[in-house]
Image (cartoon, rainbow, N blue to C red; front, top):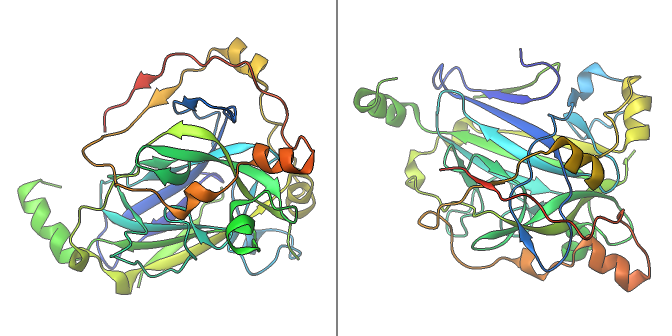
Length: 309
């Protein structure tokens, strides 16, 4: 068991190696300015609780809950421990995080509205163009700050994953060359009114799919949803305190955390998406004459470490 910080998808009827782990990481919110930043590091994995194991006031419309403070940033880690390939669709508030279109669990192979793991090891934000994402930043629903609200007028506060493994026969054939219905488990790891808005720019390419469409075992696919809750709701539902409030930039500098760059120009999918039309949290706030985010301007990040793909 990984503790209360991951979602494990297991497909034992496909192959013993068919396991995918999804983790949400705390991270520094990058400034929303004219700079495109490297990847800020993990400040620890976020807690995740199955709604089966907590206070029944948690809505049954979600399989699990995820705590985030208002204006806190997060990134999604996608890990296949045995390097077994997976097709993963990611929905945020009802829209696809890769294309900006309405989220559906079934893959659209023409639109390439999914990512492949392990080719795509993580995702830091909404994909806007070939080499840029807008950071995932938690904001209250109802004032137009979230990406889903801007594109559709509504946001259901859910993060959805639709996961399908590679076909067993394709994997078996590959293992000869390179030796060595599903279920998901949330490791023990009324709307709460929280969604994800678009934060600052981060340099990150989203890899184009490389697997032939027929290689995916879509019949074995499963879905899971998480509801974002704020710190107060988390406390009331779980009877445990949430993780500490996000670090300030001064605290971040004191710790001397590194930044990273991971991209492969040869794998990056080309073209923009509907998400390129979305205003950032800061821009929406400026239109309202409000300052929705704590100030973190005048920040010079360290030179990023290059991570090979």
